[in-house]
Length: 273
Image 1 (cartoon, rainbow, N blue to C red):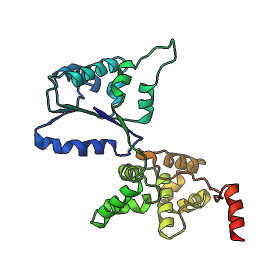
Image 2 (image 1 turned 45 degrees about the horizontal axis):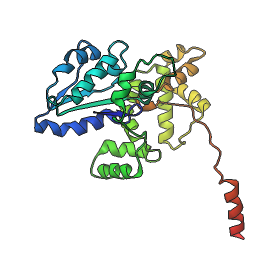
Image 3 (image 1 turned 90 degrees about the vertical axis):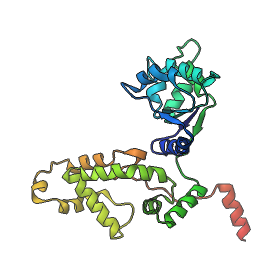
Image 4 (image 1 turned 120 degrees about the vertical axis):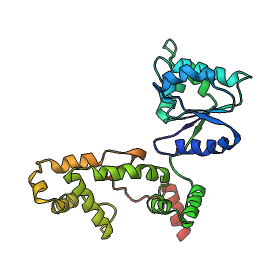
């Protein structure tokens, strides 16, 4: 059993899929309990899981965190994994860090322990998925891009500095949907921002600049429908994050230039003399 723990859109589900995909050629089956609910399906059929089965518990909070069934599912998984006649089996799951922290936290003395069996089944069976790609992974992604992967190449133009490549790829369809289904004011702000970037205005665009520019992107009808707080409402809508904690537009904080520690600056002055 292995549960990948990571934030939204860091590639947990895709990593699990890539891991189990070759098993199909060796006669393994994939079981994803989901009907009528995920927790009910798991409870009903976990005792029927046959050898050479991958039990797919994507978004495992729907199973292990269920208020009535979570502990019973954890107990059934323990039986499945420890019974000598039922293997080999593979249980794969994914969790956000906040859920993993909740399920594995020890209660205070005297407090109830609602996740004791879940904590036991997760102990030693979790793997943290980092939020960012390291240098080696970025080099591998660059090689794929050079081999003709257009989506990878496009994502690398935005993610090469911070390494949040998976979030960029996962969030792009939702960002596009937000634009396509946006209200006229939100679309006008985005179109003004996109044109400004195309013309080389810069990465950080002043809010007042976008507000003034967006008015010219509205039709006469849409302009007449504007309310007094249209800009505030549109900016608030665009700042709401999608997958991977990305947003169409978001506020940025100006960061002061970094200076070396005082002791290091003192050594540098002495060295330069």
